[in-house]
Every structure is written in C-alpha cells, then in structure tokens.
Image (cartoon, rainbow, N blue to C red; front, side):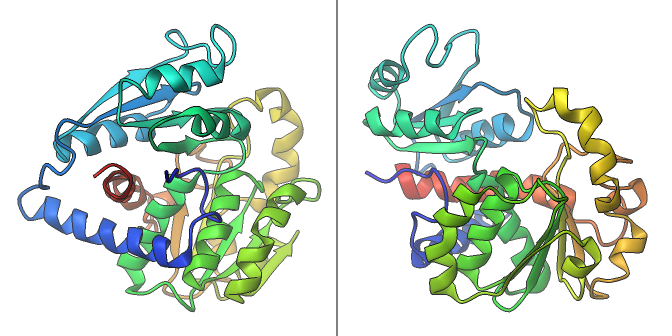
Length: 305
C-alpha cells in the first residue's frame, strides 16, 4: 500500500504524474466540475495543529471528488496519549478509506502508516510538508510553463517546508539554493535522507548564510515564518537572527526580473516578508494557497480512486 509521507520515497515518474494529474483536475474543476471518482470514500483528518488551508482544502477536495471528510481534532484524539497511535490507526482505518494527519512529530505519521490498513497522507509534520511542496510545484509550473532548469531560492528557517521543497526540486530538475542563519540550516537527518535523490537528479544545491547569494538570478524566491507552531518560546531569540533574511524589495533586486515570490502562509507581515512584496506584482502566494486544493486532489485520486 502506498502512503504519502514525504517526496523522497516516491519515484520522480510518480511525482511527475501527480503534477500532471493536478493540472488536469484543476482544468476539469474550472470547466464545470470534477467527476465523482471518490464517491463513497471518506477521508479521516487528524489534527494535532490548527489549520486553515490544510483543513479546508482537503475537505473541499473530497467533496468536489464525490467523497467526504471527517475532522478529528486534539479533543477527539489525543494521539499517543489518550490512545496509542497504533490503536488509533487500526480503528480509524476500519472506518475510512484514507487518513490525513497534521502532526508535530514525523514519527507519529510514520507510525500511523505502519499500522493503518488505508493510505496515510502527511498533512504536515516537523520534518516534511509534502502536500505544500506539490502545490508549490503546480504554482511554479503555471507561472513559467516548466520546472526543469529553473532556480528556487529559499530564504529563512531550514524547516519542514524547505526540506520538502528540496525534495521536489530534485524530482523536477530545479536548482535549489537555501540561505539560513548559522545554526538554523536544514537538519543533518534531512540532508542524509535526501542525499540519494539529489545525487540521482544531479541538481545543483547551494547552502549558504548569505541571502543575496542564494537569491542571485533565482526564478522563485520562497520564505516561511521564522517561528513555527511549537517554537513560540524561541521567538525572542530567533527574530534578531532572522532579520537580515527578510524578503523585501532590496533582496529581490538580486533575483531575475521575471521572478515570483512565494510563501506557504500564514505570513507574519513585517517579519519574514514585507507588505509591498507579499501584495506586489511578483507575489503568487494566494495562487499557491488555492493550489493546495488542486494538488491534494491529485494525491487523493492517486491513492484512493
């Protein structure tokens, strides 16, 4: 059985297929609606973290495709506390045809998959955010008409979003540059996990502490919040270190003239990104947000149909 926990465990052919399917399903929806290929299918959605885009996009995606979704918050499931993760997986997978989990710990979603009888989708963990990366690839493709040969520059915290973007870039033949403050690089475990994929793809990867160097001649400039959920106690220490990594007009002068600016949201405007950039003519952040719906339809159809 196939799960969608991160991108490195999928072949490049499969990831390319997902993108093509997302393009098709978006066109189909805009042309009058999606066929009910997930009729009588139910997605169980486990949330340890609150969400706007993940909750709504998955629920709407299932309804557009003829199925339905059930939201299970921390009050219903104390994952690994009120009940073991293995037992939750065994019980829930006897009721539903797929499970999406938005969790703090990657190990939790992996354990769900280990004991589930139905496909499990990682809606976000501390290590990876593969659904976001697929929506991002769809957005970049729509803006440039291709992915191979483009340069994606990520500026900020070497977090779960950055990790999945690196995997996606490798699958699609995109150069990848990341600029982070010292001590906030992509974790060593992530680099080891993606090393084989990067080597096979042959893409150039730059890891630097200089944002201007990373952004030089980039087609895509991407940032994310400096303080993610669960890191609130670190906020006072992080903000001064990350201030030079703000995506603003001065930084974007180093990018290509036809660049786009991306952010997975929610944005802390005035911190990692300025208002004039977030709302400017190069910004595609709300196109990204919409594309969560269409990229996740592709994942759901591939796994559940």
